[in-house]
Image (cartoon, rainbow, N blue to C red; front, top):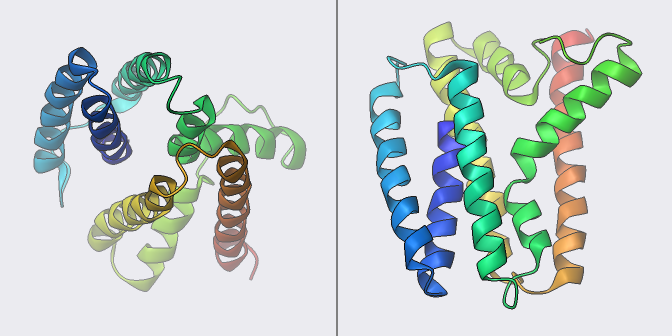
Length: 187
């Protein structure tokens, strides 16, 4: 979570600096510094754990920054741009909720180990050992996340292309998820 939080903060800081939102920019720089410090202590072997409360705190802070940035740049950036940059974080939750409810017929509020990052972890664990699997999963998820954010720079203010790209992200996520799922669970 801290990795995606940092990646989104870098992008938001760039946007807020570019559009002269210095109050939000300086808050973002402070939060990014704290995030990088947390990453420093957590990579490659985790020493600090945020837990659920820490994840909820980061999610709340991120929501606040996204809303403030969206409001202050509404004449330059469509709100759907912000949906695209937070795609993975929110779609992972929605996808897991629907998967549990519709396909597994279980309570969607209970945790499980079938999230995309967990499937990737198991995939790497089978290939290598447990120690390498954790940071390989982190590097892979965050690298993919950065890779999929880069094209947004080209069409950040084109609503049609943003919507098209959002559906492309849905498609890619689904392909990757089901590939890993069937590779791990269906033998």
